[in-house]
Structure formats: structure tokens, C-alpha cells
Length: 88
Image (cartoon, rainbow, N blue to C red; front, side, top):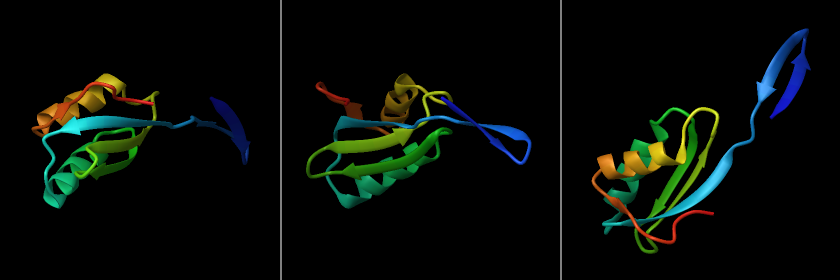
């Protein structure tokens, strides 16, 4: 975590983490859009891109605000499963 002083105020800047999850059940561009929208609505997620061809869901999120478990739960709530071998 970095602390910056801007005009006399301390501002905390955190490093976002990037993770790629393997998602099962996406079979069209509509699935990509649905999943991306669901994840971007989660507080702390700044980027969510899904690819139904590869099954990849690439996320950029702030671990100070949300957790990897919350990301996976949101995928499941949207109607998809997270496969093995997920995450970098």
C-alpha cells in the first residue's frame, strides 16, 4: 500500500490484483456480458472481462475491498461454476 500526500491530505493508494478464473457454463457472448456486468457491480472490482471461447474470466480488483471468495461467489450467483486450475 502506498500513501501519498496531496494538498495536505493523505490519500491511500492500493495495488489492484489481477486474477484469471476458469468459468464453466459460458457458451455465448450474452454469457460474457452477463458475467462481466455481474462482477463489475461488485464493490472493489475495477475490470471484468469474460471470454466464452476459452472460459476465462479476467478480473482486476482491490483486495482491501473484496476477496477472491467474494468473486467466486458472484460467479456462482450469476449461474456459472468456477473450474479447477483457476487463478494467477
